[in-house]
Image (cartoon, helix red, strand yellow):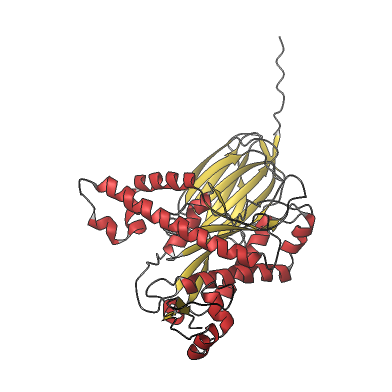
Length: 424
């Protein structure tokens, strides 16, 4: 018997390497021709992450990959432990916590190996909600998808992640122009942020409302129009249970209440009660904002749903922050895909959302905020002989603003009726 040694060849290829930098993490994605067969280890002095891909050949350039990454200084090739394999080395500026996982083909992507580098030393200052006079109302704006997650893709090749970030930045700019309101973005660039981090960032910023911006999609081009989603009862019940399990979050969710009932014999029961109440309040406020947003959106675009829709969506999970998800239109509809990428239409959508937010908080300004000081209305009880125009004249406001503040459909008022007098 004659044994012939045949050379081994790499059957898989690394066709591309992409880096998505984020403020407190960096994601590296290897585009592969087949399923990832990998192992990795770390080295120090200097810090390096070494990744071995078995039976794999490098078929792309590594030059200049790390130019925009703060954690990575260089991505390079090294000598593999086996022939026909590839060893990649990520030179790092500090010690990191790596998370590596393989992804199967999905959407426009094939097989991938994802490397998440989490900056353990990143100091994230937690903004605590302090009850002080004239504080701003903080509103978190969440641009859906990002980085490795493109979201839905339009027929003309538009990525939802680009539409949502552009729209979110327009909303942020408009909110920050309003005295007494402050907007914060959950993501500021094209990088991936998981759902837990989105709500965590909103909470750390002291947000009193979370608005997640998306673009809808369907398998056919017909469906069109905007819609607004709120948390479902099922999601609410699930999150109450999860919040009870995460004891380290109790003080964040319930403030001083958590300390007051700590170590009592009925602690779990009381925790559930208070978190339940908090969740109910958040859902009620979410529905109120959702209706206000729909009322404004119908002025600038068609509506897919005329009432708020409820669903078990991960981003609408916070028990303590009222949250809504706004679908600006269908990116799968060619006409709306063009509209969603049009700056003029994006401005109209952003204005509609911000107008709804302003109207909501003018009617319900949180205690201790500048908005409460500026917009809390005066109450007037209608006396015999008074008309709507006379009341308006006496308080130096317009009849139309008086009607709007009191949801009046005509100029008829009755004796004893209590009217809210807008202050601006």
